[in-house]
Amino acid sequence: MLAGAEGWHATTVRRLAPGERADLTDGVGTIAECVVKSVRPGALELAVLARRTDPAPDPRVVVVQAIPKGDRGELAVETMTEVGVDVVVPWSAERCVVRWRGDRADKGVARWRSTALAAAKQSRRSWFPEVTAVAGTAAVAGLVQAASLALLLDPDARRALGSVAPPAAGAGDLVLVVGPEGGISEPEAELLAQAGATGARLGPTVLRASSAGAVAAALIMSSSGRWA
Image (cartoon, rainbow, N blue to C red; front, side, top):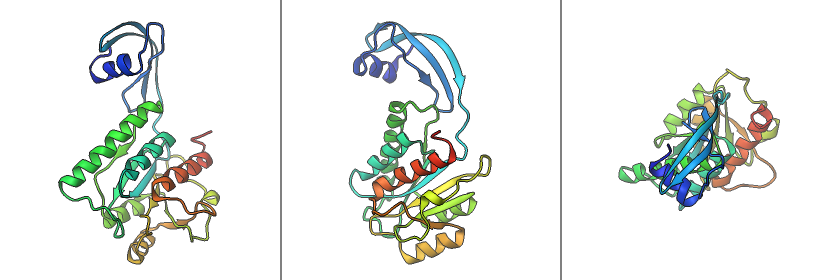
């Protein structure tokens, strides 16, 4: 039986009827392939046809996303989730116009997490992405240092992202750092470079901060075989 918020969504929004498919997931790899047996207001009775467990994504793709203004943050999280990003780290970079502190940080992270959850269900992911707490530059440098490969997206970088070989399975995380619209400051760039980040450009055009992470992740996943 599927009830509660998910049951309401299935019966009221999606209007599922007996005989239709309705797959369920726990968000950590397990999928139950089901068919609807009966429907009542706010609840479904389901029959499980098969179960499977998908392996954890490897390498994980972690996007450090500088916090953009307005609703562009939620747009970035939604698109990155649909593409397949595994971890999103909200970054309070020096040149971010928006500042998340205290209650505002809690509310901002909650919005990003809600957006990620909805996008994960819509895109039928078996592994849901993690949205971390807000990170400062020192914490981002720590993520870079621990990664198997860390790339700082920079439209002026000599190296094209498409030429970068992704890490092998089991090697560790791949971290993509997306700066704010005004670019990252020189001290931030130096700190991240010292931690091991390499500059990489996406292409001949300059993308907004809200779209750069999704495009970069798509390129990396294609070359790593995750989109094969």
